[in-house]
Length: 329
Image 1 (cartoon, rainbow, N blue to C red):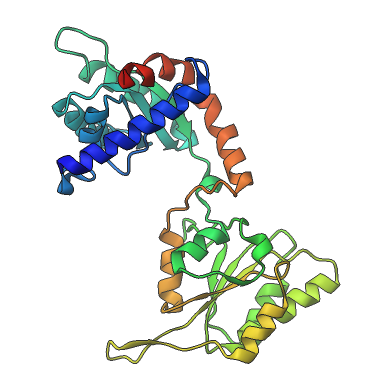
Image 2: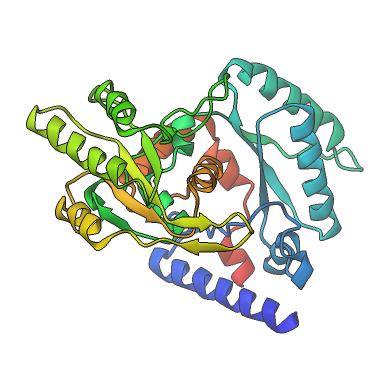
């Protein structure tokens, strides 16, 4: 583990030196951000947990937890305990994805709990709450690029729409929003699509054996395009097959149908395969995936920046952060 930690520290110091050379002073590129994965104990199984790495680098930690009351504080307390064990300074806390109707209650409760429970042994003040951010569901909606990554595949058509987002969560009745697994006949599927207006976005999921559904999807795209109606839905074609005895295999998409999909081109309707997945498994993976930020997804990055910036005190964060040059020295 010592060699691993040495490699991490060496890489970190290389970044610090590079930012120092580019910036030249504390006003430019003076902060190095090390993103931890999961809670502060992640990586402990190989002796390189987040808390230990922060200690090795002399880095301060910002604890981030999703909004709530008791469970949120419990989560923060567990992370704080490991930071204390390794002597890591906590710069502050950010509470993320808070229900808007419980925003004030959450902020006040956690502020009081942290102030009372996290004071130092000699009366030192507790780390501050740097920000409380209300939830914005759009930021958690996957783009088709996320769906591609989940299934290890690429769009057969419609690649121009790779960063189009879909709300695939569930409403209070448990019915899917923005996602539909096709189990009906072609006529019923077409009626569903024809009821959609130009703003509707649905990820339809079908099995590769449903050539009728696939061709119907392409035909409805062309019909709406001819009428000048925007078409924003996508189709996921699942190729997985289970013989009922636990033996799984793949059924290939027919070359003829595949050619028809590809002929729609990058500007056409988004269609992709989910190799090895049944429609039910594919729907589950899409609904439970965690969308990742992508630098090319400019709309989501911009919306995230606009949403988070007003709710986080970045000046206070910088004031409570050790300068990289202090560590590098």
